[in-house]
Length: 252
Length: 252
DNA sequence: GAAATAGTGTCTCTTAGACAATATCTA
DNA sequence: TAGATATTGTCTAAGAGACACTATTTC
Image (cartoon, rainbow over all chains, first blue to last red; front, top):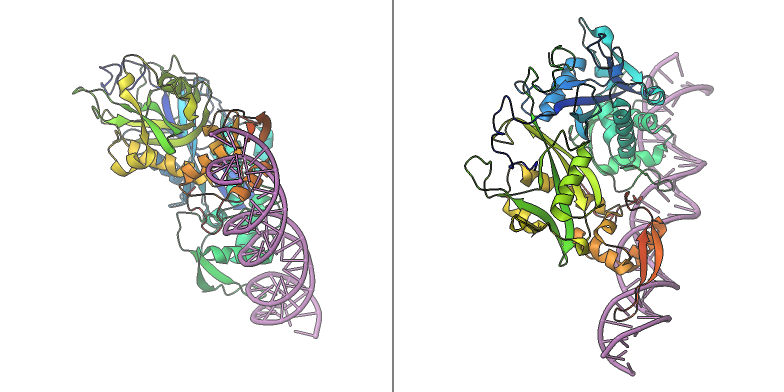
């Protein structure tokens, strides 16, 4: 009945003969600031006509058929609008769609998650600067008062991130280049929420072969550390084992 | 500009003031038949008005706002329509959306992938039975003549499946219960395309603790094997290591 | 008893994890 | 030289992979 081809006449572009769900894109933007994992949220406008007025939400919005060539384009557009970060790590998280998640009607959102270096952050200025802010991830996930089903989405995003950090080089995308191994280790520790052994960490990272030496970072105090750049700024490396075989990861 | 709240008046459900993309759901249904990984495809109808007439495609179609409470409901509906399998393993794969993937206009599809036991397969009969068939995955992915962007989608699904089989109990969902460890091992070998050591395999599976003994399966020839059932028919177990540390998986 | 398949035992080698030791900078 | 941080080395124990061996059925 609802097969793609069941009804001729569906081809009218502007006013199809059957109702269409809304299509939106949301982006979960993570960074590490002040030794804590943070997520970017925007405050929804007030107004009786608005869904969830005044509540905080993930940045996102309707797909613009005229502007966006693809879902990922749409996600990048929203990301640049809010953070002015040009080319972050961007990965699709999944999609959420139901009749009830948006009071305006059946809607489906395509969710991406992005990792950006804390140093690069420059929140969009202008009229609505006050409506955009970083939040500590642990605090937000405990409070659970986000708009739409964004509590669920954020929860899933955090689980996915923490899970993948156990066996990928993802935290490298939270640093601007060049970075040192101790800095990278700190990213792992912040995201995982536990200390990581120095020696094993170094062996593992260097063996994975995704780092290129980039000279010593001068100026700091104490012994200077080797700086590194990523061989591939887009794809994380997958390690053959997790960090803690004793406590296997239970997420995807 | 395209923020969810930018334009009041967008709330009109039936005829919004801006064009909406089409929203579809597709399902990549895998099974193992004749010692080979197979995928279910449906043939698109002929007709000048139809996109990709006569081409094979993944089963799927438009979300029906009246019928489907959620995306997953929609996926299950399409799965039951084609295979009559009630409760298979179903997981979201991702979404594909762009202005060009469907000649009828901007469309976004939410893709799920399902694993069903070969024994349970009973393709939907009736008028369009001839339009539904199983295809060897390796053959289809080489030929690359599917409708829409389904070649890409299938490719991604196969990579995801093969990748996850390296460190999860997913192949158990390709068997009907009760099953034996040698049968399970064969599922792994078929999907991975390589032999797996018997001893290590058994140790690993039993240590993972996701199997419940279910008595010996009588009647076969030779020594009978212990039958097992899954403790959880919905969630796969994740092993702390991949099967072959020597050749780490490079996919997600 | 032979054939076939199910299940177990043993050995080796890799490697993670813990922790100790050394190196190089600033003050 | 003291303090701080970077980097390397060593030891041990757990576990994977390889492969040989035993067990239980049918014919």
